[in-house]
Length: 489
Figure 1 (cartoon, rainbow, N blue to C red):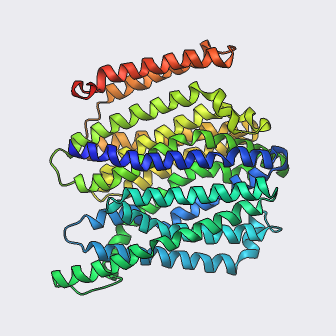
Figure 2 (cartoon, rainbow, N blue to C red; figure 1 turned 90 degrees about the vertical axis):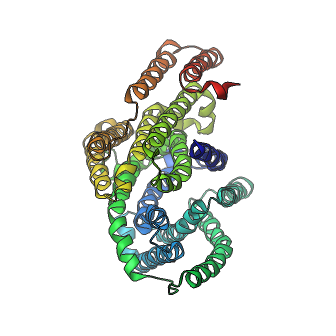
Figure 3 (cartoon, rainbow, N blue to C red; figure 1 turned 180 degrees about the vertical axis):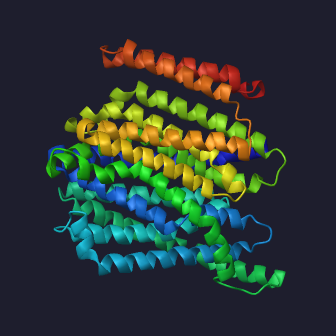
């Protein structure tokens, strides 16, 4: 199982950089939740606008990250031309987007209720365009298995961003949301320059490849672009639906909340701050994806690929459930991250984490339609989940506030996950050992119930001590059932 070892190693590199980076980024949560009181709505503005950024980023990348891996691993394709064509596609979309935003900033700012702060939208437009452009070079690093450089650039961005935020908000005493967006722009712009060596090396490698293989050198192959477009547009639909599952609640909350604009920003800020804690699940899934996606497409030619996918799913779920229990167990420590008037929203954390686990499982299940080039299925699954999420949010936010957002995520991801599994078993059957997976879910549910109900009312120290024992019980079960004996020595 050499590929499993490679997956573990790369996941560790990507994961550690993401975990350390996210931990450092968490420093911004207590910073912002103290600089921007919930009643002022400042963090609600940050939460609201970055939700739009996430959606637009998916649109501008146009599914080209996955498409790049798929076509770069095809024997009949020139991988260098795949890279340059992908860059062209994303760059053209990003340039068009910037032209539209700067040309129609007045109606856009009015529609989003930011007429007095158009500069927020303009700065974030440039940020998201640069992020989209950088997505392909970052994918190239993953394709070339340059995990160290990938992680180094991600870490540099985080250190720079956190450092500048500390300087402006702590040392200089700034209290304006403007600096949140402007510092992001500076850091994102700087990272772009670090890809110059990659572009130079790739250009030379492309010319050598074309000369050795007797094919014409092309920066953009429009025939290839059409084939890539056909493959990627369903992924775009899938991505839009998927990101809406993560961000739609934060976009529509101010529009449907029954309590006025100021109260909506306050409640959204509380929810956004608490969701940051729950996003450890998204972090784990992202780290896993960075390592797993290139291997899956490379592995697609091997005979034991389905067994590999099944094993990877099992260990993904085992690890994410362990992370879930750890977050719940040590919630008193994590509360320190938030400002005092944000802590009332911590009750959403276990719910949002459960939704993120479902999203991770759905991601693992998604490869069956990518490998048979039927990505339209993913678009339908994600669209169905998105419709469910939107319905839950629309009908229940007015009465249940951000709790409806949390449960909407569970409903949306759960719908997409189940549809992908049952249809996938007919189109591309994989033995995922569902009984074992459900066993671990049941064990986690029982341990969570003990943590939540039995230890309720205890002091923080005895509560966390008991929770630690419960986590060790989970680890012991995994050790006994799913750690090979040769690995225990």
